[in-house]
Amino acid sequence: MLIQTVPFSNIEEANLYRGCSKNLRANGFKAHCFRVEYAVYLAKSRVKKRGSSTEFTTRHFLRGLIQGIKPFPDTIGLSYRDVANSLEHCGVTVSKVKEANRSPFVFNVIDNTSANRKLIKFLLEAFGLGVLYGEVVQILVFKGLSNGHEIIQAP
Image 1: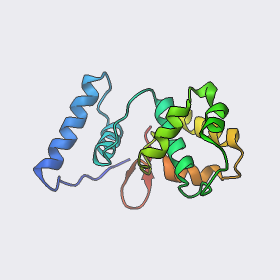
Image 2: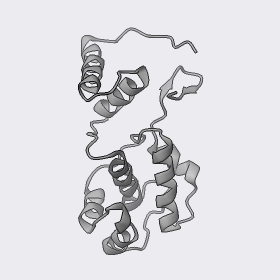
Image 3: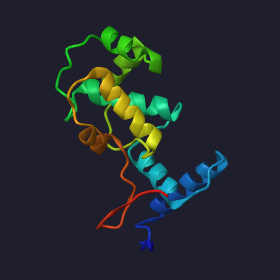
Image 4: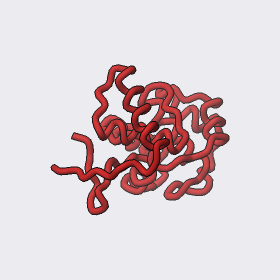
């Protein structure tokens, strides 16, 4: 598979990519183009990835659910306590649900891994809202590198 490259538009963009790859290496990851692209996307979206991947996925799922981002219904008819009780085995508390309402929702920030997709499916089933899994994945999961014609997924 051949990925065509494009020069950076300015020095700030080059420094952003360099900083993200340096940060990945400092945290023990290889700086593959897919990981660097994801880190740059998070940096441009001003999203800090804190906690485990499970916590990050659950937090962004809750933001979409509580804030009524399409395809989720505008209101779910549950109190914060009910939502927290439904997901207490995932470590969700009432304060985390309230935080999901205060923090802005950002599209496509969850890493595209099978574990994250499985968790999204599990969270959807926990609420039984009748929302299609594919539609939720479209708004939550990072799409990967794109060459303009097709989405290239990480190996």
